[in-house]
Image 1 (cartoon, rainbow, N blue to C red):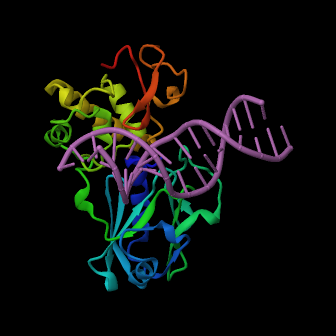
Image 2: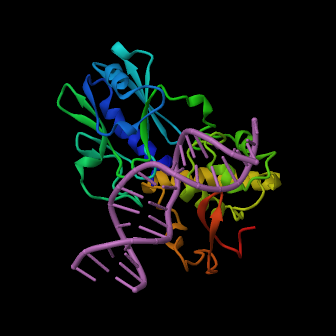
Length: 263
DNA sequence: ATTGTGGCCTGCCCGC
DNA sequence: TGCGGGCAGGCCACAA
């Protein structure tokens, strides 16, 4: 599913759209338009603009507008099945949990450029969305660049499960269910641990493994390419010690962890 | 404010 | 072979 590594790949793909004038925006399903702006308003705001930058904040992709839309921002979210295509090319090769079918009916939002190319958000389950001027201030520090002090602040003073806290986009932006399981597994931390109970040494360990995991996944090309992932199925075993993994719900999400080495 | 829960959304897989 | 229930989870509205 799209977590930070996938959105980063989408961002790089979207850089190929910078400076190309938008002829018009096509809204495939009006429910895909989020926030305060109506589909009509969004279409009007996008007509004739160019984009000056493609940025990523957590799982939010932001295109900064230039020209007629100077100062406005286009936010793209991908839910768990959303993918980005530019001129027919995909941002990532494979998206776990999402269909691989080439189904134009799933094109929920399309930017047509005057040069004939197009940028498409394709999302079968429509859990993503497009929003004019999304509020980025509600997002926590980006997981790829978070400092140890920022991570500590995101986790301390809360009795909520550490996994829940890691996935809270208001505290830390970019970590989803798969990456959270992978990072906690590598850090030998039980996902159910009270967030405030982590020691300074555990904070350091978690920060280290978060960085290494994200860089591994960026290099491998997806959040589904972690070391734990192949065993993240009922009956799966810990790749480190062979213990059968525990499967349960933590923070409302299916979680797998090793009862032998995660404490 | 913080935290938990349910709902949205729909393709896919499994068992009957 | 077809059918239906359960599952997947990012995000948001809502309740306590």
